[in-house]
Length: 337
Image 1 (cartoon, helix red, strand yellow):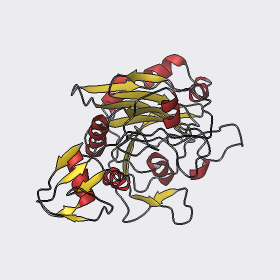
Image 2 (tube, one colour; image 1 turned 90 degrees about the vertical axis):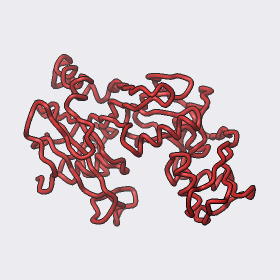
Image 3 (cartoon, one colour; image 1 turned 45 degrees about the vertical axis):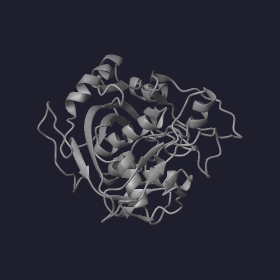
Image 4 (cartoon, one colour; image 1 turned 30 degrees about the vertical axis):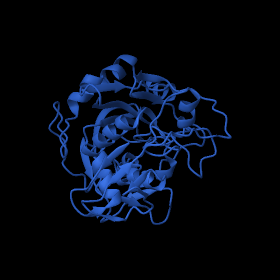
């Protein structure tokens, strides 16, 4: 339970978000779940105006396990686990959490089946989920076991002290290493897609060529913002498409590539308990590796995706990509064809 009084008049959801260092959406979930009270009375409206002499109480209830009608038929490799969190290597084709449109078992249900203790800061359906990966995307994902850890990791997601480096296979090589700085919003003609939309939320991605050999094009990507489908939208805006990404324009013979070839390879953050920066690597899945190893040697692949090399190539500056091995990086990709 957390009790506090605001320092100045403001909306309830903003006050809760600021006090717990969580997002407004997470604060809204707490209010919707009747876990927030003002002056001992349950609060029902996120927009409620509160004053400095008001007493706000956030009481975290016992998390209720979801009851799924779908059998969990998959397993997920655990990269790391301690009393506060887990880091998993999410397989492709696994949905992270439930939604009305989801008609299959999810990663959250797998965690429950394993008996994992999970935070409920995002509600029971998204229990433990700090950030997500699309169904077709594989790779590293961190799960919070308690609300304190969840709040701390969410704050890092916001201030960019948590980050990921992705690997992707594309239809064409990049012309040059670049940063794409273009706003992303909803696609007006397709509710499943996002698009470059003037005036929408800022979105910035850095892209680095790793391998372009005999039709194999491997790139690395780092995000400075966290918009839905960001890598896919930004690549399509420069006429590059991830293999298997039919939604954004990749064309292939049906069935040959049955998922988006995008993998969250490296994940780093400050451990909430120790205060130390930690880094985890999620090994590539066989479908991704097979496409690479048909055309290149394992030795070349290992060299190009060496974690220390990738870390050195990407600098944690909020607005620039530094490449120690090249000076060809462009600040903004605006006329990329």
